[in-house]
Amino acid sequence: MVHLLERGPLADESLRPIMEGGLLLQGELLYRIGEYSDLWQEAETLQATIIELTSDFVALPGFIDVHTHICFAGSRAPDYALRNAGKTYLEIAEAGGGIWDSVQQTRRASPDELTRLTVQRANRHLQNGVTTIEVKSGYGLSVAEELKQLRAIKTADGQTAADLIGTCLAAHTLPHDYDGSPEAYLAEMAQQLLPLLKQENLTNRVDAFIEQGAFSAEQIAPYFAEAQQLGFQLTVHADQFHAFGSRVAVAVGAASADHLEASGEAEIQLLAQSQVVPVALPGASLGLGCAFTPARRLLDAGASLAIASDWNPGSAPMGDLLAQAAILGTFEKLTTAEVLAGLTHRAALALRLTDRGQLAAGLLADFLLFPVADYREILYQQGQLKPAQVWKRGHCVYPSAQKI
Ligand code: NIG
Ligand code: FE
Figure 1: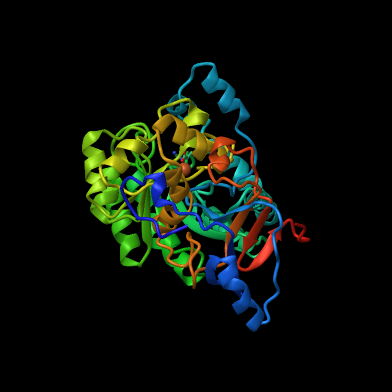
Figure 2 (figure 1 turned 45 degrees about the vertical axis):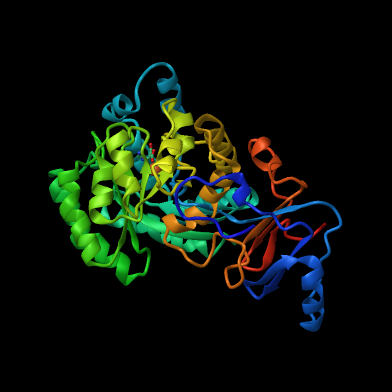
């Protein structure tokens, strides 16, 4: 496939698949991509191992999930049932369920247990083609417990072939056991937690949930200012139920603004005129039974668009990124190119990663082989078509014993 634009609408004609193609790898990188007939001689000169595929496959870059909360313990099945019985997400949270429930269950888990659960979910994602996974904390909500989560994410990164990218979400909600104001809590996190994250090299990203029942734009401002001073990249849970957060994301120059289900025309225009990457989270819309992110309007306004799973125990328990992206495409009328770019090239942009997201020489050899001849089959099968092979950093990681 050719280089895709970073923002705005993408027609499927902009995808020009290489027929009879090949990939030449060197170590963990892609060395050359082209027609097989052009590549094989070079491969022989380099004495490369040649793997010839005798049936039809479509190769895509490994998917990048830019927004997950997979470092959690326990279940929120009762919340899900309550929502379906008519209670809202915010009502459940106010009654002590919601995020606070997961915080308590996650605090009870040992670091080893939390690591094990994170690796297990990351490996399920990897098998489905997700080779890079952002993972947020935010179920600790104290200095010690946030550290426990972010350390577990780092340890888990060493135990799965997927790349895990940690993000500090200490600003998820005010913990019920905190004896003080939201401002005091955020000041404590900024002063005590953020410098430790730098010291231990646990993450360079900071996220905040700007919403009724979480934090206001005014409360977040000094916290974000401190985080930026320390060199953290920012991202925002924005406009999920009320259009509060995207304005903050644009004002602070965040890498991405995620959710946006409640964004209106003003927010769409603001985002489209900024460098902030909007991130649609169809899994949260499906989990909560609410509107999808206005993805079509964002693209038409000239914005970029990444698509992520938001995999979490509350609003998005499904965790199937490809199925969710396919469904978003159907409801929002996104082209195949726009959906695939949202999972790869434009997702890399949302994390400001320049070493992945495309099949291009010099980038990481993270790619998927789907067992079909026509790339349109992939979204058509709405997540049921799984990759036959997943390659991560130059290694076939699924199936681990390579069979073709
Ligand atoms: O992205 N909106 C806030 N945070 C998560 C949900 C977390 C939870 O419910 O546990 C989200 O939807
Ligand atoms: Fe989220």
